[in-house]
Length: 163
Image (cartoon, rainbow, N blue to C red; front, side, top):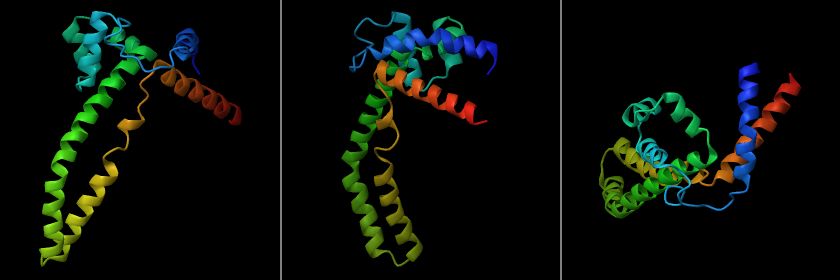
């Protein structure tokens, strides 16, 4: 590892250990943990904006956005909003799911074309398997984010020893 990367990782350790103390899910946006500008950045990032767009919109540097993104508390706030948005989307899909399944079921049972019937069946299965996949696993507490990074650092250290 390069010297710059090593010093950046070392400088980050106190923040990670402090985050380990924050093991309850808190609404970082409402709790006053983040500044108003950071709260705006969280909302923009969670809405799909890229870091460079967030920086331009808020009149800050890309490096500031990057530094914030490396904060476990900031990252937890972004993840929390992503999870909430995902939950809303899932609720919308679930409310329409009955109709969609009825249409697909009708196609599966009544279509004369085997390819169409198979495509309908696969669409139902694929959607049901994807609904709760990745977003549900996003860590939403600073402690969870810190644990993941510390675990990854330990694993990377073991990998370095194996080389």
